[in-house]
Structures are given as structure tokens and as C-alpha cells.
Amino acid sequence: MTEPEGCEHHVIKTNGIHIHCAVAGQGPLVVLLHGFPECWYSWRHQISALAPHFRVVAPDLRGYGDSDKPKGVRSYKIPLLTADVRGLLDAFGAQRAVIVGHDWGGALAWAFANSYPRETARLVVLNCPHPTVFARHLSTNLRQILRSWYMFFFQIPWVPEYAMTVGDHWAVERIFRATAARADAFRDEDIERYKRAAAQPGALTASINYYRAAFRGREALALLPAPLRRVAERLTGPIPEPVPAAKIEAPTLIVWGEDDPFLGKELTEDMEPLFAAPFEIKYVPRRSHWIQQEEPDLVNKYLLEFLGDLCDLPAHDGEPLGTTP
Image (cartoon, rainbow, N blue to C red):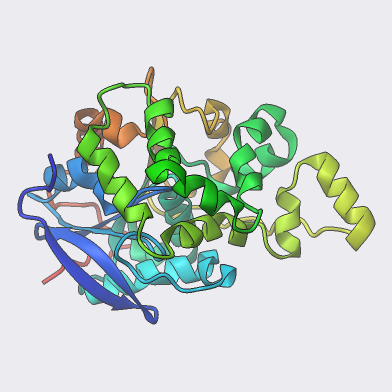
């Protein structure tokens, strides 16, 4: 599959920038948010499955692919990223939407559901921990700290970008080839899509700036591993604890490939206090971080089951789910 059937491409102005979106289908709005180092194309299998029942919008997140790439680390703070998504709802004429995210897109999905609870009809997150859980493990869980080494490497200026461009973006290919549990999950043409997206001027710096922005500011020092946090406190004074996130009000589905080399399964444990609505977790054994591309049929089945009978999604607070024209 190189392009989902019936998929159109639009450039949407939102939050002061232009976002490229792959769009298909009609009905209630479903927004698919990709991760690093990907683009809208990571949802190719889901677009085809959802489009017969929903209006599906898969953007290149700001900084990625054919979307605008504002300069500066501050341009990639979470509130700006979630405001981009909020603008997409307005652009497509929907008051509310199903928000689906994977990897960094999953982090945005969690944040969107917290910041815009009334606009979140349903929440689906694939292989991305809740930020409260992740912050706790990143500070205390040595195994997860070691798995997350690249986040600290990405704080170095210029070097990560250069490393990822060497050898025709060999590192981009390696990220997928070396970490996928299913050898046939990525064809050569799929890898070339991701390489071309990463090769867009400014794309690598922009996408790595997501990680840099997450570690900027005194409140972000709370994410440091405990020994480094103690050193930082000696230098700068007490570090404020992260503000507790509001409970997720939308019904939530988590799909988790158990053999994720970047994120341990323990990041999905003891999550009940984080939700004010029903949530469920679907574990997929022998599959990795790239779950929607390694097991597209299974993920599509979970999505369609969770989202109800075609367009007949449950009401939220007595309000119907907004549909697009």
C-alpha cells in the first residue's frame, strides 16, 4: 500500500501555521497523531479501515513532513502542539473528535484530552505512557532511564541532526528496521517515505525539538533521574514537583505492543487513578513499538470495536459527537 484509497491531501491553517493533512471519509471526526520520526503515512492502514465510517484526518505534526517548521525550541511546547490539533477540529467543522495518538502523537493525545476534555469524544493511545506515569519512571526506573537514553542525547545541539542525516538518513531506516518485532512490517518504499519526510529542510531539527522542549524550564527538571535531580537542586534550589494532571474524562483505549524496546510494559500498570471514565488496555504480545504497522488488522479491529457501531458513538455529557460537513 502506497496511498490509502480515497485519500486526499489538504493544507490547513491552524494556530498560525500550515499543517498538511491526509484526509479521507465522512462522518464523525477522527484525528490520527503520528510519532517520531514518522509522518501521516504511519496511519496508512488505519485510514483505509476507518474512512468508510468516519472523517479521518492524519496530519503531519508541526515540524514534520510537509507541515510548517517554526524555528526555535519554544515552538514545540506541548500547549502549542495541542492548540494545533484544536485548530484542526475547527477547520473540519467538528466540535468534538476521537483523538488517536502513537509515540509522540500519543503524548499529544494525552495532553489534548487533559486540556480539551469537552472536545475529546474518545481517546486512543498506542505505545505511549501517560505523562504522569512516564515522569515517575523516568526519575526512578533505571531500566526505563536506559531505554530512554536517546531523549538525553537529543538535548545536545546539532549533533543528533547530523547523526541522523549520515548515509542517506541511515539512522532513520535503522530506527524501524532494528526495533520492529515483525520483519515484514516495513517495506522498502515505506522506509523511503519516512526518509523523504525527514529530509525536508528543517524537519529533523524540528522533530528533535519536541524532546528539547520537553526538558526545558525548571518544572522539566523534575523529569531528571533522581541522582541528576539532586545535583540540579544543589545548583538551582528546590525543583517544583510536576502539577498533577487532571483525570481523563473521555473513554480511553490503550493498545500496547509488549516487546517495545523504548518503553517498558510496566509503564501501563496502576493507571486506574488517572481516569474518571472507563478505560481498557489491549496488550499485543511479540509486537513492538510500531504496533499499528506491525499488526494493522488487529489494531483496526480494536479501533472499530472501541468506537462503536460505525458512526453511532456514545454521547459525552449528553452532547452528540460533532460531525464534519
